[in-house]
Amino acid sequence: MKMDPLSGKRLVILGLARQGRALARFAARVGAEVVISDLRPPSALADSVAALRELEIEFVLGEHPLSLLEGTDLLAPSGGVPLSAPIVVAAQEKGITLTNDSLEFARRSPAPLIGVTGSAGKTTTTALLGAIGRTSGAPTWVGGNIGNPLIEHVESISAGDLVVQELSSFQLELWDRSPAVAAVLNITPNHLDRHGTMAAYRAAKANIVRHQEEGDVAVLCADDPGAMALATLVKGRLRTFSARQPVQDGAYLAAEQVWLAAGGERQPLFPASDIPLRGTHNVLNVLAAVTVADSAGISAAAIHQAVAAFQPVPHRLEPVAISDGVQYVNDSIATAPERALAAIDAFDEPLVLLAGGRDKNMVWDEWATRVSARARHVVLFGELAPQLAALLASQPEPPSLTRVKTLAEAVAAARRVARPGEVVLLAPGGTSFDAYGDFEERGEDFRHLVGAFAREMEQA
Image (cartoon, rainbow, N blue to C red; front, side, top):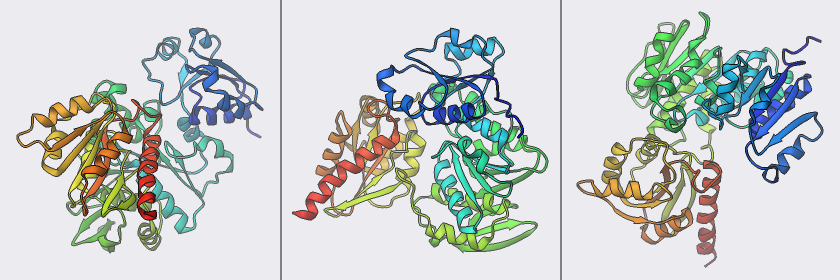
């Protein structure tokens, strides 16, 4: 058996979350000397440490001491560890190679990779591509920033399998290679608290196409200037997708049909009414998936069948309940103003908007203008509430609003003001980190809060 490049190497992993644990398991299995360091105290990590108890792994918890770098060959910062962290800066100064689980998987995958990135929509598009692959009958693996880190399954993957990775900017900033098929859905301001500037954020995203070769395929959104700016980097086949106009090579929407253009020919694939997801942004996600799937050789019939059967991914315009004639929708994934506005645009009904959370150094001016024009009532919660209240109050015709501290109070306030036929939409615009571990935990809490009173109403 061929020896793995990690065998005998000292690998220090920063972060004991899902991706760090997956890389640790793989590295220990192939004979690396593995050290995991996490800033959280041992009391907060007992379960994670126990899950790795059977492996020879050293744990350094509660700190990232620079002494960890002594004799280290590779340093793997998890997504939550910025490259500006002192230990990462020191590692780079020492010439220690930086890596992460997604990159180590990409270096070993026997199957060509499909990579999906974007400021918004990448999880839905990745999940849809997984559904298309499974519908086609191909052995299909989906992971990366979504679900299971694929490094744990690399030995089980065969050359003919379909492999789809969702890739975040945090992961891509370390990549020195690119997937064989790479999709960029959009590039709009996001994670500026981490990357510092839009230039740095764009540079990280660009790695998904930067290292492609002539035989590879880049799929870019023709409707998004940020995505199309990467066209100059494309060395292989450039395909695009659009909800506004026909494209020369890719999928587009026209005359209420989804069309596919390739090789100088155009064919209608299915009616737009067969797309079960709300919002123009989700139409674009479907068009991206169609173009990528076609690039991977999947039949139009399998693509159509999978799209028509697809259900919303949790926390992404997810219908939660209808109570007293009011629909409650969970879009907790909306952690940037642009993402929140895309959620708002998905509805024609009058809206009661739940917004807030924690800021990421984002610009909120357009959000304030459009929310004032679109929402009948806004309930603000979390750290952002004072800032957003001031912005809305400065609008020529500000909406009525309520300020509270917690999501529970926000749901209760929304229930009081919502009228039959309206939509109560959780599309915060801010991150969850002022009160929750992640957007999923926030979305689960919203589900629980709404579900509790919806059940009460049913039993009354």
